Image (cartoon, rainbow over all chains, first blue to last red; front, side):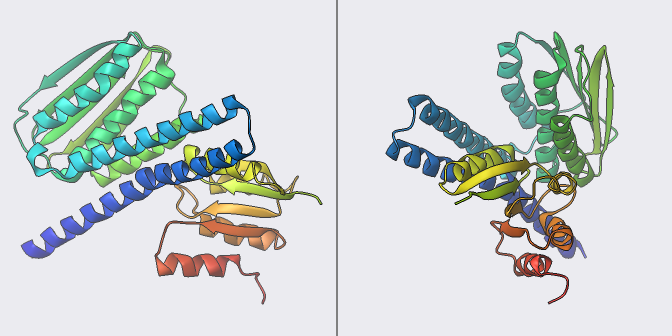
Length: 211
Length: 104
């Protein structure tokens, strides 16, 4: 029974990696391929310099997205980085430069032990939910302060990303896609997601059992 | 000759925009609409029917195969080209079935 469970777990992880490769890496490489063909064509036709520049910029952006997606996948399956403290380092590395660039003050508050191991799929989902929450703040909130809290207690991990911005409308299409993604990851982690949003800011709270 | 009217349905923004740019730049084609979800396409193509729809398979709410079947039922004259990186036989088979007219 134990072995069967283990095999099932590995199978699920393989599926998750396949999905991430297909969705993130596949789409970005597909874009690079098509954009390169469009650029070659435009060069042959002596199209305006600006048109061609735009395509190369998009191409560069897609290459960056691919690198980032591969980084995330490699990190999430690396057994040397399986502790909560490793995850916290990654979260800080991701969020701090982005928040600083927009002059948003941030507060990281970590409570509970950070030396425990976290299952691969949970750390991957937790990180991607965090990324989406930060992305939301950057894109929609017009916030001055962001409060990031990570708490472990009673075999639960709770992440909260709170801001003092203008709140966001979950019916706007760009939000909807991000939120849909988040909900999917929450379900995969057997966790719960609470989203509070008002004109005084929003708070995204994710809780899941630690595995 | 009139250009072929193409529409695109793909949930990944970068890929959708790249592909739209490529088709737009191809002589003989024009892109008349792009859609980020299969469910948004159904009510919107009636006014200006495309000759061909490029359809992604894997999308969050309604997938491209279900949308293909629905579009084919309402507008059998619209050609649908399935975009996919899948080599999954079942999905390809389902896609072929979905593009067939209701009565052969």
